[in-house]
Image (cartoon, rainbow, N blue to C red; front, top):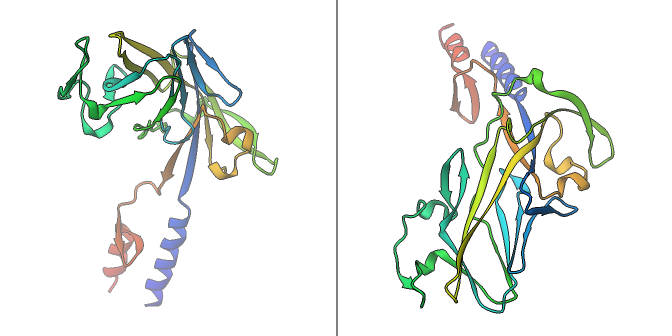
Length: 257
């Protein structure tokens, strides 16, 4: 039993050595029609509409604010709006449906057919906010660690924390995507707007959690983060009694009797 206890203690120690890596991605755009504010929001602004994008948070929640500048109602058809990544479209309706798989249930006086359950009404001179998709399941482990540059950023206590950083252009970015929105008005006008985004900077940190970031960095709307749990490689694990035990060690324990 003593031998088994020592082995289990060793396993627990090994398990505690697993590390969590944080990947902080700064998004950018080369679209001429998009401006940026002081906290990194992406702003598309015309005489009729203002669209503001924010990606702040874990796995990049796609937060869209739409301001109707007209004196007539505006409608956003999410069934015909999507995020496009590597030429694959994901509807802004999320898991309810795929792009263009909507049922027609209403028609405007000008003949535009739409499903009211997938359309947002924006009153004159008002705005709405929408968030139904995330840039999740991003994995940056394939990037060669030798490509990173050693640098440091400040935490909330103004201490310099060592991190690894890598900059990208639009052409070599690990993530490039477009937002496509379909908009129609009561007077029959229908149009679409498209904005593109890409990861311009990637920071890999081992000991700098999101709640430890300096406020001027953590509160930016162009910053998202991804958590990667680094387990002990080569282990085949099973949960027994709440303890994670490597199958190789289990064999050693029970075959020793």
